[in-house]
Amino acid sequence: MLGQYAGATATPRYLRLEDFEREGVRVAERSFGGRDIIFSPGDPGGQLYFLLSGTVRLYKIYGAYKEATLALLKDGGVFGELGLQEGSRQSLFAEALTSVRVAVVRKPTLTEVIKRRPEFAMKLLFSFSDRLEQSDEVIDCLLDRGVSTRLGTLLMNLGDRFGEANGSGTIIDVRLTHQDLANMISSTREAVSKEMSELQRNGVIETRDRRIILYPQLAKVS
Image (cartoon, rainbow, N blue to C red; front, side, top):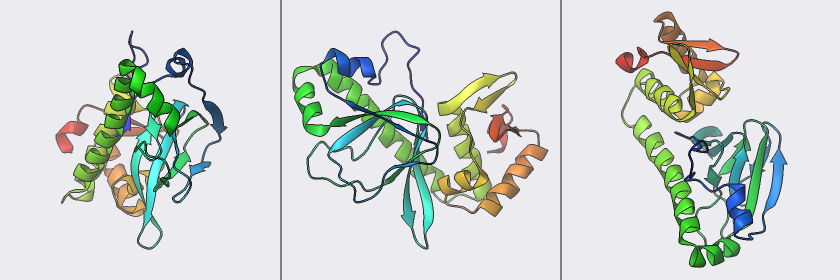
């Protein structure tokens, strides 16, 4: 569920600030603090947001004011209404989970660059596809499964996307509360807390300073 930035490669697949500068694209850089709302449903959707640093959560409100997290994005992620047409409105909440920096680009400007720069268009397409892949993973995680299976699947997806080697385990490099995890699998904080405690007792995960460490045995119980 978490698109990790491939910035360490020689030719990054995601758009970076240098790509915009190279094409002479004017961007507005903005900074947000942790838990700031970047935009809400109904806000103008005539621009796209490119995540330069930090972590952003995209979510919807449903039912009796319950939250459903649709994606977590790290460096290199793109968000906002993905269509390039003008006059659209945002349909999600975008929340900064950490301090973040974003580059905001108007859609008409992007359209002009796409017409003349296929390489730029391919990077934009890759960023879009990563967002859509995360949505597919969210749906798959929720299909006809118990809380323990949904949680285990989520943790492994988080490890794949945000994981960093930590001794014999993998640390998820985002601080997440049990409520955050519950929002991602359409469950309750109480149910997630119970399952997390069970996973810790089984020695397949560990928590330190609100960061989760996953051990290889998790795959066998999920």
